[in-house]
Amino acid sequence: MSASDRQTTPADFPLEQPRLAWFFGVLLAVVVWSYWNSLSEAAIAWRGAQYSHGLFVPLIATFLLWVRRLGGTFDWQWQTTTEKWRLVAVGGVLALAWFSYIASERLGQQAAPGEAVSLTAASGLGFMAAMLYATGLLTWATFAADSWLQHSLESEKQRQNDEDKTHLRGELAGEALASGTQTALVRGRYVGLFILIVAVALRLASAYVGLDVAEMWTLPLALLGAGVCTIGWRSLRWSWPAVVVLFFAFPLPFGVERTILVPLQGIAAQGGAYLLQSLGLEASTEGAHFIRLGEFQLGVVEQCSGLRMTTVFITLVFVYVVVVPTPKWQIPVLLLSSIPIALAVNILRITVMGTLYVYGSRELAQHVFHDWAGYLMPLAAVALLLLLRVLLDNLFIKVEEQDVPLAQRLEPAKKGST
Image 1 (cartoon, rainbow, N blue to C red):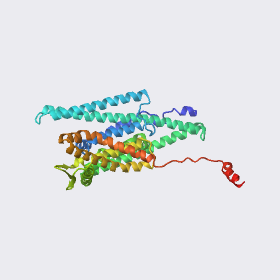
Image 2 (cartoon, helix red, strand yellow; image 1 turned 90 degrees about the horizontal axis):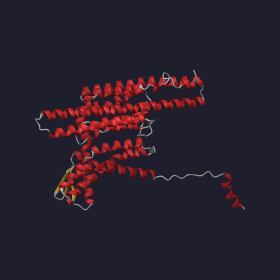
Image 3 (spheres, rainbow, N blue to C red; image 1 turned 45 degrees about the vertical axis):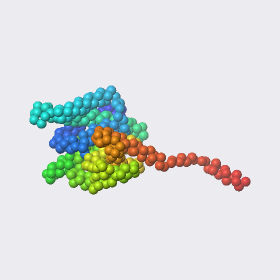
Image 4 (cartoon, one colour; image 1 turned 180 degrees about the horizontal axis):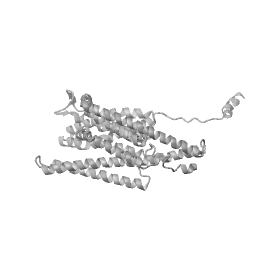
């Protein structure tokens, strides 16, 4: 058998087996189903103001799997007709999930407290929205895995062809590559199984001692183990950003949240008061979380602390440095800058609200604060991030040195000596 024939033998290249992607999707579905009670508790937190972003984090994580399917490079567009229709199908399922969720919320708000039929219908629509959302994301992740496997197979074949032309020859090259691929896949399955066992053990221990949030945090680890167990340890390079992002979907432990919220409220109140004073307004802090603005008193409640904005922006900055080519030395700078930028934008929101209270009306201030701020704050934070990136890009000036021949460098000296 020639080397060219061995390149297309499925037995020698396990990555060529398309069913691996579907095994990956099925195992992900099993893991998600086993964590359904933990996800239901997380959904309760997602309905609050502090963690309402958590509903969209799984979507962002799946998006990262898709855009990194071609060897880790950012590419969100479809490459083939099959990928195009797969995206259309996933988009349709996610759209149905969104419409079901909106219908459930509106029906639940319009239903009377004792109206059992409407409340039951709203609950049913909510459950259907959750199932459609999970199905759409799991299907999308499976499609991304299939594309990643195909790309990995093509890369392996290209590497084999290069080795045929350089070091290895004939059947020796095919046997070496097939043996290495098979060994890597088997080792990856053992590693993935170990990760999955560790995730299950941590979940059981957390549930035993009553740590609900710690139990939720084992879900990304379990999903990572499921991926490595089915498609090999090389999937870590592809899937690790999505796993990291999933941690931001879940709430913080109560003690940690209390420890962070109180200082954030104080920083927001003091920063807002100083900024209002710089605008010529009579503003001062009262207590730890209140701002006295003339006859108005603004209270910096937990929703105004900036915890949600900080979490959202850290997630966005992480996604930015993953998908956008960034110099390595800028990555820690951008990640660390996400916290002060988020706090600055939150202080700016409080300042705008206080200014509208003085020069506008209470209704206008409340309308801007509750309706528009949720959209404008992330945009302002992203604008500051982009300005920081431009500043870092122009912080150092690159000087290109030209190689001057030795004869030309010695020529001025000769002329001077004469």
